[in-house]
Length: 267
Ligand SMILES: [Zn+2]
Image (cartoon, rainbow, N blue to C red):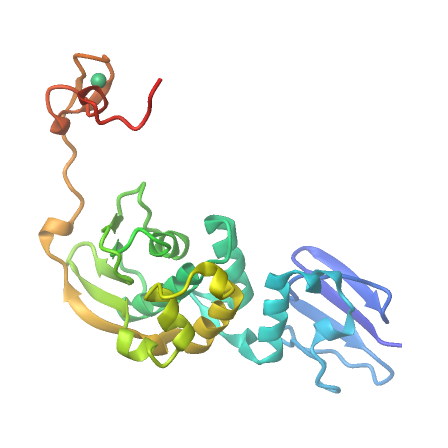
């Protein structure tokens, strides 16, 4: 009889034989068998048998595709990959919580942010610029303190898969981009960012697997100096609109954009 004690977050659970189901991330584990063995905190498998822990427990959560992908990565030795200071499964969880689902663009964006942070070094006050409205703004907002709301992230609608982190005082930093020459060695990534195939043509977990395999090998970077014109725009004066009476920025003219016929809603 094998007994496994797994600690998930704050909760300890004991699994005996095949009687139990379902666990999430293992952060601590103790396994006892006939030759009583205690494993270190970082162990993901049984040293004696080489079996990953999750294989001891027939587990209903294996039915979910995200979980299957995580298990596959544990099996293939990718569980020790760290990105933005997180293990891969925490990295995935953080993306899902913020972005709503595990998107290939945010996963790749995470590796871009990870590299940019490494290049620029710790303890710097950084601003960020992303060159597409899709996915990349969320990678920056999840993995750096820069958000659209605090003004440290500038989003350019250029549809280029590139981002820069830079020292907000000196305006020097690094630009990282998905390099087409390198990406051509990874057909799924290539088809995805060139929009040759629809989402239905290849499931995102297959694409994410290739992104995890590729990581930095599809990216390039250069040191840059950010032009002053791309710093945050100054705030304009505020006035009351002569038509609707609401406060608005005078940059829009004598009346607010909505009252000039440019509104996004009808009543
Ligand atoms: Zn108005």
